[in-house]
Length: 228
Image (cartoon, rainbow, N blue to C red; front, side):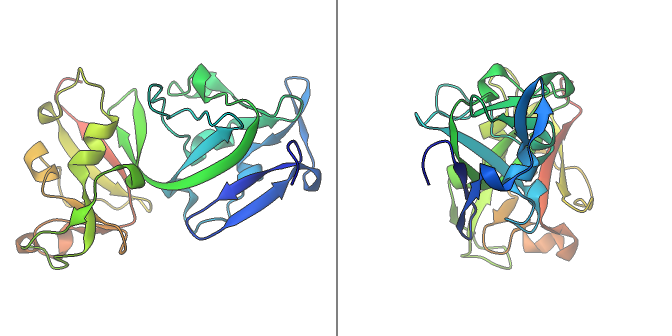
């Protein structure tokens, strides 16, 4: 594939090429464009809303790169985003989402990486925490799947939350993609004992709490109370 002919879509399972010539472009802001959801496709993963979408330019730039930290795009943000075929630049209807920044308008997009992520939501703002960028460890004793590779949910919150907010000031609602959630809000101390199992794709707490404290396909950690 030559530059300007298409983009690579890299999912956990495989890599595919999306050639621009295979799409029927729309007109957006007076230019030919391809809606980003259409370009990426909903067929790359089983649950598109569980992933962050990292748009990468020819120079290696992406919105969540070190020193920028604007966050990867969510599936909902791709719904209001377009690839301008004249400039090969990602553009968004930024007025519809306060989390979108100028830095999300990646130029000369050549690749989109799909990263399993947790959406950390603290009210007016939110940010995706890619699991691959969080420290993983062996699940400690006291859990049914002790020894399995896991990421502590506290690391996801720390990754996303601005430095001027104290995570101990909040309670935490852990939600799954289908709308289910853990039986109750968690304290910050309890978030430190909650883990995302990487292979099973489930959140677990200590086995003593019982099976109700296991949540499949976790999608979001919503902060409630505290300084809001």
